[in-house]
Length: 293
Image 1 (tube, rainbow, N blue to C red):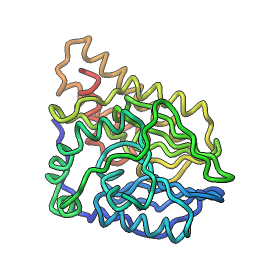
Image 2 (image 1 turned 180 degrees about the vertical axis):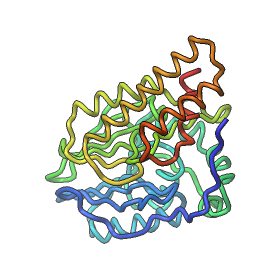
Image 3 (image 1 turned 135 degrees about the vertical axis):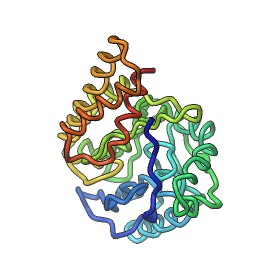
Image 4 (image 1 turned 30 degrees about the vertical axis):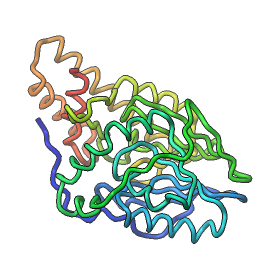
């Protein structure tokens, strides 16, 4: 079975926010492992931050950049899912922003957050250092299904989409044009299938494909993935095609009686050849094992 490699880069959010659409700024991940794309959405009356980075230091950096752009406008914070690099800097925002999660995300954080801290610390000393002293933060507001935040001249729609990459996946859609996907999509990377039994075995490939169908139908002009370069709706089509391929091939091998390790090796070879420009092929094995059940 594949294992995750040790992370040797410092997982630090760095750089300046870049405007990718009217009022929508992104601090790029610069393809640094365990650094997310961070969004700062400005309205006339308030601003929304999407993702915090991992740990207090990253959270404080993101908060400072948000304050530079938003001035004294009230801040909201949301995260696309509960994983450490996306939301475990939230303690820096406690009292400085209104924190909003969907209910499934909040519940998943409660169930799995502590375990993920310990698991991620095992990815290397630089990861462990950023997670030292992390406190899991409860949201100020919880919603079911969908919620809208009117920032003043800019409308943001939060939608609970899971189970897919996680149970509590959330998309953030700004003015029906800019879509933050979280880790349901990455640019030029094999999708992350966090299948870590017994800690976490809730990733749902069929549900993920269904989410991609819904997101493609939205026809966003700009897509901000969880990791990798800002792009367009073609990314969502690529992710759907890959997930459908893995699901179909896994079913074929399982029906033929192929053991999961052999199936994962065969499917990984095919996928690497077909998507030769994608990074992080270790996630193919995980996705196959999810499909095997």
